[in-house]
Image 1 (tube, protein in one colour):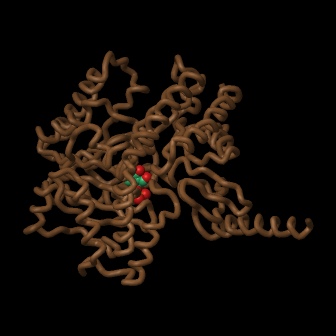
Image 2 (cartoon, helix red, strand yellow):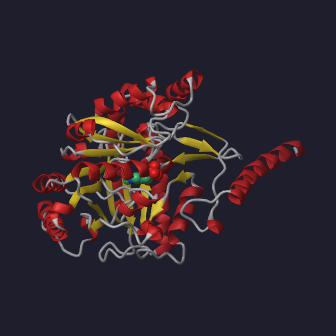
Image 3 (tube, protein in one colour):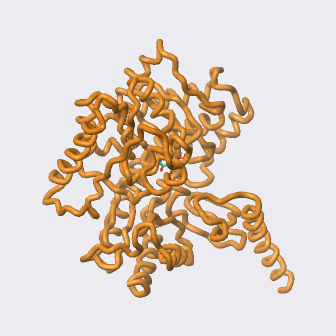
Length: 453
Ligand code: PLP
């Protein structure tokens, strides 16, 4: 017994040592360093991971809405190993088989107006390069993006980002203009219909473009469905309306599919839910699920052809990294062979029904928003007044971290944004697994009702 206890103690020490070392020598993202407690992970499989004490956790936000295929996908692991054996790296100036194959594959799943892709290292630099391409192609410089948006944290992408995470790089670069999202739940105006709301937001956008000087506007950049700022799903006519405004004024429509791409919403890309074709599409995350990082900017034939004779002033040492391309090809093949969209739509239906029930049952749930396996639960003090459980930008009592703690105690792992809990499990989750996890959420929302209202 003493021996067993000692082994357990040693295992525990290993986990806490790793955590302590990581904290000692590396800076943790988006945090006051004192408050961080990265969970040491010993092993991971599918939608689960285990700490060094054998506790199993459920990955209910797919490691930053990224790990669509879950941990340990054998086909993707094998493709990476095979590429390692051929070569790990080849500069973008050389032709690499995995790079050529991934480019062809990506274009094969894009809308028919899209003809070429420029590979990047991730989502932020995909958006930066999209803006550069739009500026070079159009000769115009202003770029519109929305307040409730996250497009990345590097300097260029950070200028597109509209929420407070952009403050650290202000004063920003000139020419980045912000407008408001169609966040109907919290709009001061009571709309009588979705069409009414759509008309309102589009009229405001058009007015703003005219005041900025339509001839100066190169592009409008939008998360097709606003992701980390709370899964804000636009009304049906909104994106087609933005497309029409872009066409009217000769503005490029750039859809940021970094979070919504690769099956998350039940279609390969989020914009397919709204029947629009962007001029430029940026992606990252789910294309390889981070097995090896990569992103990309896919452009229309018109834009691609423009650069036949005009200099493309974009380049990254790791653009189209062979390992990432091998992983990407295997990932997309997996999505297709596993018929992942069918699973997202089937399990997404269960998620939708469950969320509606939670909204009905719990006083603390003001709104639920969902599409495919992408959802947010917006917590309020009162359904009637819609007063947020924590006011915007302020949570001095640490209410939201306490709620995450309640979920973590049940081994349900996710993250929050302001007063919203995100539920976005790997796309391989089964209906039974989802139901089991959402029962834990139900119990925690009961605790929230009892503790914080
Ligand atoms: N765009 C969107 C919509 C995102 O959600 C993110 C990251 O979460 C990014 C861009 C930035 O991507 P990365 O973190 O890979 O640079």
